[in-house]
Image (cartoon, rainbow, N blue to C red; front, side, top):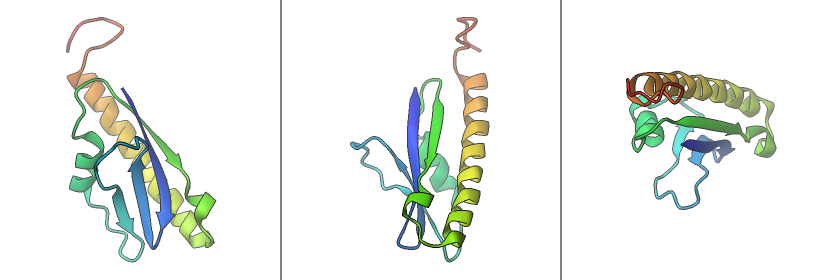
Length: 107
């Protein structure tokens, strides 16, 4: 399964949103003023329905709608953190919880 998310900036928030238009969940947001990253909400938003091997794609769209260079720089840092977290978590999940497609054997 591949899930694609878009990161963008709107009204003082960095927003990560699932690209599926039928997703009923509110997007994950980080307020620019306090830059608090709620890890629990992040994990639930991204991984709550994972039940098979997964790949997460994050698209950084912040530079497309940000007027201020500081917004773009902060957004790049947020993007990198989210991307790295998703890679680490999906690698671990796929390695420990799901079938190794090369071997056709469960772990």
